[in-house]
Length: 325
Image 1: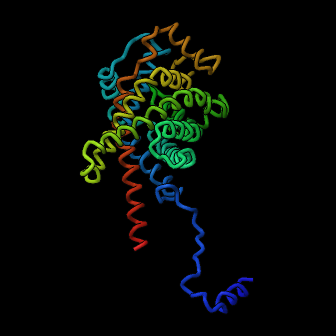
Image 2: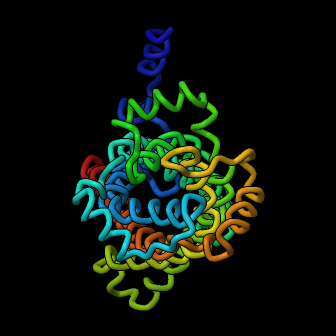
Image 3: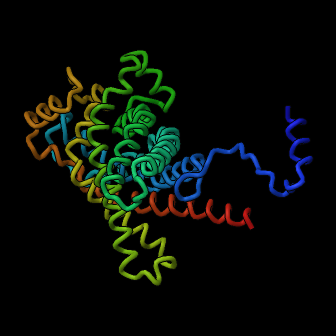
């Protein structure tokens, strides 16, 4: 068949060899010229750099939310929590569980950003600056990525606890499976989605709006200040989203660490039930414990993540441009 087609092409007088169309086996590029796998690579790199750089702050947040929640009535501040870890465990205590984060963050962020870009293209209808599209796309992205990251997040947070009984990632996974089954890895998934849906909607919409506003302030130098624009917009978006979703993050931490190091167990994984239980035992103040390190984590983390992600996209664009030339 192929030989016959080729013969027909060459036997046609008006058909020139250079007019034969090339058949590409790679997937078609998305709205801004990049392929799906390139978004996945860019997102994976961004997620790993973000979480590795900010992991000590995440450890502080976890300790504060658990110690200040159902495990104890004693309020613990950022300085006290940091001092306690450094004194009793040394700097290494701030990085306990980082291997679990590495196993989960890369794949999860690859899914996160690639689904975001795909949904943004599908829902945009030609308008890439629609805030609603950015928010909805972000929600879709977080539902998909949380399904990937939640099991490793459970392992990570249990390893981050003071006097954690687990020797490492594999030991933690094995003991959770033996004691509570596979369901324990997803006990907080519903809460995580309920938290991350508004978190991501606020973050993505704020990021896109802030980026656009910053570029309009000085359009003539926007390309030269691209890194500053992305980092600033990311920090604003991450900090705001983190602040408004702290109560739900407290619930997520309580569910993921239940039954470990003296933490209470909950008869239901319902968000409302856990909220009522925490408030009944520790008061409404317990719902915002850990908000300071949470904001301190997400503001620079988002700045790092977005600037790295955009830089990775720029790299792929330049690579494609060089190949075309």
